Length: 162
Image (cartoon, rainbow, N blue to C red; front, side, top):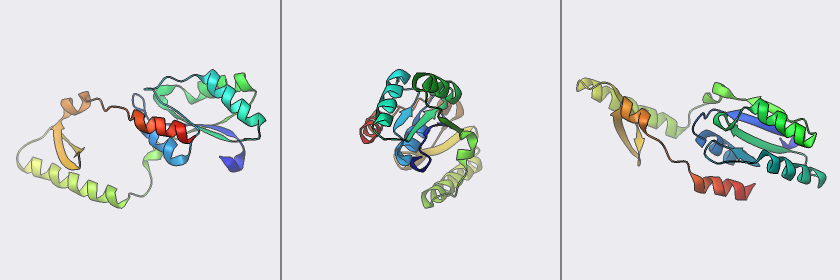
């Protein structure tokens, strides 16, 4: 973003959960991360960016979980408040691509073995995943009903780093 000297809003998946935005924002060095779990004030963000722009800072990355608001609406609101026309990028499901890491490959193998073992035991309707480093399985309804707590500590760290 620095080389383009632009304010950029980047929308990632995350309708009800800001984990992807949080990790993408921390990993990518975003100045702001907007997630459904944490309220934000676009007026304050716009004011801060405008102030930084007047001091010579020309680029800002704002990662937005789709559940935090439409990237189009947020960018329009920002432009109206600042007179700065931001770029908008909607990664959508393209962000699912990429080469798997060593962890990804081992994790997939471990999950596949567990799923096959369950089927051999005549057990179906299960979701296989990882919990506390162990491969586990839960009923589909049970898995869908679970709410993963948002990592507020990592969010606070992201705010401090930006």
